Amino acid sequence: MSRSSKRFGARYGAKIRKNVDEAESHEGECPECEGELEREAAGIWKCTECGLKVAGGAYNQDTGADETLRRALNVETEELEAAKEQIEEDE
Ligand SMILES: [Zn+2]
Image (cartoon, rainbow, N blue to C red; front, side, top):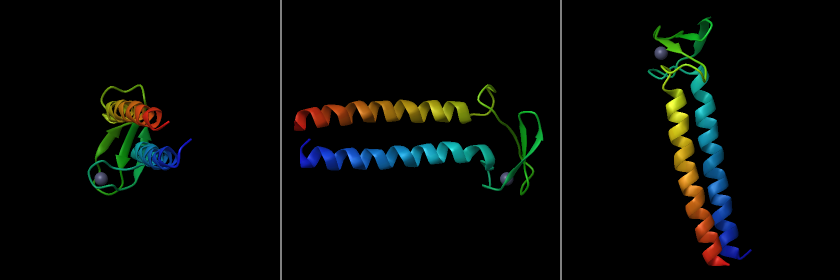
């Protein structure tokens, strides 16, 4: 591995870890005010700050979190492909 591709790989690794952290944090955080969510019922979360109800869980179509995650994963896949091509060009 050349020096430049090594540096490139580390940079992408950090970005992906950040995205995963953000995706995971959505489950316990109000999308409106970032307040704490408490579980009200199965799959329903309520914000302790503003009272917003959020449907949670990967199987619920209304969460938006699923779509957000999917979109994030798509972006990551494209970026990974670009990164791989870049690394291959380097070597
Ligand atoms: Zn809130």
